[in-house]
Image (cartoon, rainbow, N blue to C red; front, side, top):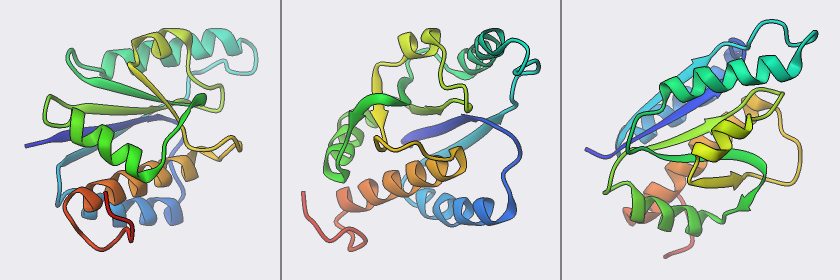
Length: 157
């Protein structure tokens, strides 16, 4: 079965955000094995943000498996349309698992960006991490539904 996961660094999400994610988690399970892992914020962020970012990177890199196609969520990445995301998933999911990675408010360390084969920007706007998580899940669901010929997305490939 096709597999994808979302790794994100952050605190425990508030109930409204978690409820939204649960909606898309259920929807995603119809198309693939979807997994999410929250990694804790590194300690010492105020005193040593660079060190904290490096510790978060080590935690992220430990969670990535060989052969996974890694998509880093980064403001400097390429903005994808839903159709472009669908084409990406169509090309890469059959080959192996895909991992989407959202860093903390400190961003993603260069080591994580170097490990990523793709860099995706959800927007040029600065987004709260909770919203970014929901947007990734919703867009992956939308793209998979589009590929399956569903009616959630009105455009056709």
